[in-house]
Length: 337
Ligand SMILES: C[S@@+](CC[C@H](N)C(=O)[O-])C[C@H]1O[C@@H](n2cnc3c(N)ncnc32)[C@H](O)[C@@H]1O
Image 1 (cartoon, rainbow, N blue to C red):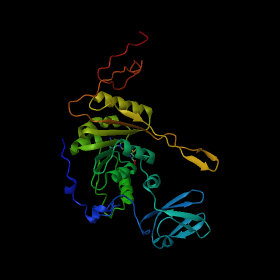
Image 2: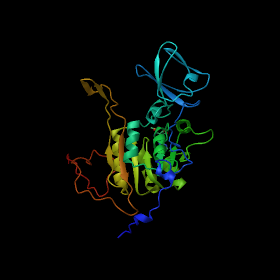
Image 3: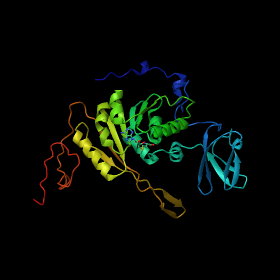
Image 4: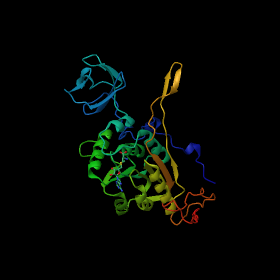
């Protein structure tokens, strides 16, 4: 039986522990979250929304002007104010002023490669179980959109090791991540390391061990051995792939590898709603497809996944199928023979 502490022996919380978020009184609660509080400052990015819902993002610089089809606004009229106000431009346009949220920043920041959309980043953080203090590997870094979500989830005491094989994309990602987290010059988020190279070679060479691996690239199956070598038992591999052919190849490669649980593939669809008086209906526009997600858990060394009791659908691995084959699968006879 586990020993229960005697309630009289439990230490009284110190005054700083009694307040949520004050366990480390010297560290601001929002440190390295990418969130800034207080009045708007020079060098920060703001997001203006006009009455038609159009967005404008720019960096605040003393003495500068923002121009639109409705005249101009002086940056000095924004600096020093608490966000969440409306401001009129010289030609009568009205603008709502906020700091951009992470989900807004990643869809408006400069891009090298296509980004992971916020709806999918949220799925990755939840379903790949990214936790504070986690050691996460991701490749490729692309434009750094997913990196921002991963860094925010692991926090300054975790670790995100990003690998990218194209230098020009790594540069874009570095700028975006540093801008989002407000890193001082020549510094970056303390949990982040960016390595230039192909994950399939650079990860084994680094000797890194990790809890989670996220693969967002054209051919994630080529990196599965490297992922398996770095993941701790119970760790999660998660792939983000745009097409059904990539999805099939990755899932079958995971099965054929034998060192992972049965892969779980899915996609998420998000639909806005129009809610106005009696007119309550789904919005007309939606992002129909972004990508598919797959997760699987790393087994302990020498362990095998559970044998499937259900037979594959007829023809699933028939003569027309040429991809990786799950181990122990009998070859189906050609129905033409
Ligand atoms: C779609 S982008 C990643 C986008 C990124 N996740 C984001 O949210 O901004 C794919 C990136 O993977 C990189 N890549 C492809 N295969 C790779 C590999 N084997 N190792 C490292 N990077 C790779 C590509 O150069 C490209 O920048």
